[in-house]
Amino acid sequence: MIDFEIEIKKKIEEVADHAHLSPCVNIVHLIKDASVVWMCNKGLSQLNISLNELTKMSAETYYSRFFNIDDANDINPKILGLLERNNDDETVSFFQQVRVNHHTKWTWHISSTKILYRDKSNVPILIITQSMPIDGMHIFAQKAARILEENNFLRENYHLFTKLTNREKEILKHLAKGESSIDCGKSLFISPQTVDTHRKNIRKKLRTNSFQELSKYARSFDLI
Image (tube, rainbow, N blue to C red; front, side, top):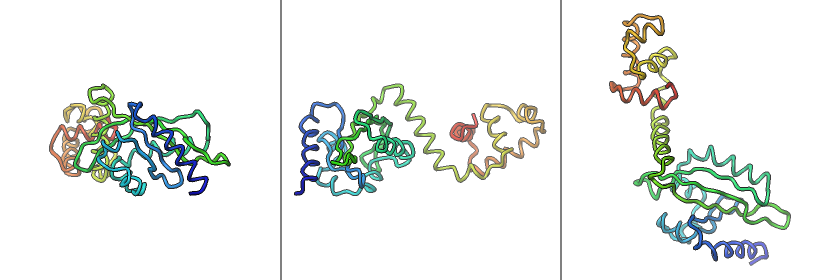
């Protein structure tokens, strides 16, 4: 084993020796390929996987299996910024959606990451992340669950929403607020009959006759 590998092993052992004292799940990643090189027993138990299985898993498989990849748009720039600044004491924090498998629900976690080890040239080699689930009864968790539901709805129905014209989106906004065809027509300076025609087209394009679902479209796509 070369000196470089020995130093990495020592650093991981340092973390492992104290991980049982932390209420968080501790994870160590190798920066060059984003793979997991170590995870504490608490995390392995939650994911129902062995350390051997996990360390043999590619980063792509790991993230697609246990995490909502849409969160990467928020997380990746933070991690890259951390590595570029390469400061000793800096950490970055973020929220993640985690699940054991595709048959379980997402749970929100809050995570914090910092550089754990650099080589002799001061190049970051390892990062450590501490992560813990947010109490399901916490007000944030409840709000986050609603946001997650809307985000999932948005992704699943974006192809339908884009079929609406700008005028139809305007009308959907007014209807989702509970306005009648007459009130909507007055606001937009068009006849109630024209509103009704647009309403029929909206329902056809969005494939729903449900007022609740039309309102969900308006909320998810930031019309109201």
